[in-house]
Image (cartoon, rainbow, N blue to C red; front, side, top):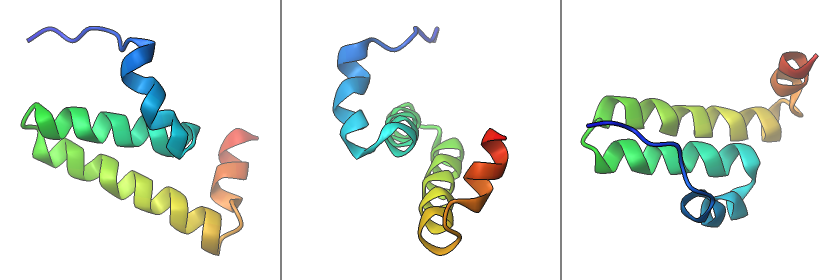
Length: 67
């Protein structure tokens, strides 16, 4: 199966969750729908880690990544 670039109308509803969480959640659902459960679980862990960093670490890991 060939992958096509996402259309804005596919991604736009997910961006209501925020830019990072929205894109990760969109990819997680795409992988889950395509039967790639292991990859979908990695996206779920990335979402969880992102929110743990924002809540508990005041975004330190994200700030270091941006610098």
